[in-house]
Length: 119
Image (cartoon, rainbow, N blue to C red):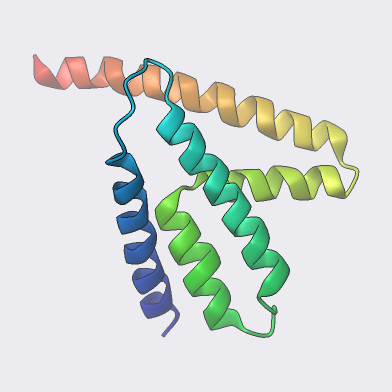
């Protein structure tokens, strides 16, 4: 049953993400993505604050489904915030640094690999 809640929430989150991407924005800076990620982080913080842990289906729908479908950056933000909140500053900083660094490296590597497959 959990899969259904995640799937329905994910569908809603993805549609919301797509809708935001339709906002015209003529700039090289990725404002729409930045705004999307901020809204996702705001949403997951709100969900965690308002949805009772005794409501696992609601958490699956809102946190994993909607927020995850909208942007996984919200999950990253929650996890980093939780580490800092627990005063685990080294681990929090390391997680932020590695997440950004590795993901940027992953994009670069993925692009390079795609060129190999296109040959």
